[in-house]
Length: 176
Image 1 (cartoon, one colour):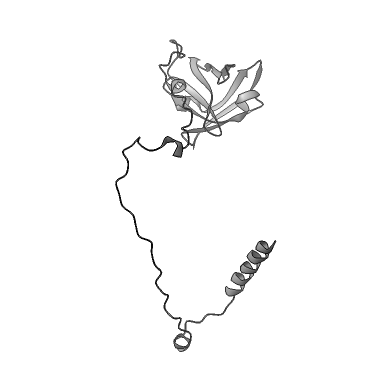
Image 2 (cartoon, rainbow, N blue to C red):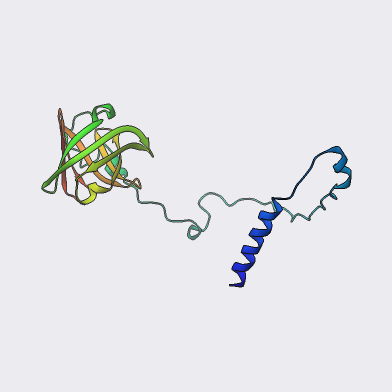
């Protein structure tokens, strides 16, 4: 309680200090000259050799995020041999999504968002509700949530059709 009163009082004093009239005329300068500031001691700077890379204590660093390199590799074992080439530009627009027995809409844009492009869904269920971005990696389209985590991957199987699965294994199909 006393601390909050002290903080409030300090804030009021600072606000009032900002209301003081200051003048920079030559007549007032001689009368209101402030004394110079006193130098303050500076602690000494240490020097030494840094440890070689990798020799640091690993407990002082946060754990590395889980990577999905295999999911992004177009030559990964899960990539169908019949997957067709895909370009980012061909993905832009509205798609009809079939997943987990229901259908919904997906919108893909070229607006940058993190390492991918902005995207979203409407009327979807499950993991697809969290979709925030997407990117093309080789022959694979990777769907990501708003934090950049992979929530699904798709491959082009026909002219206007993509098939794949969510991160939990649910089948997903996009078509126009």
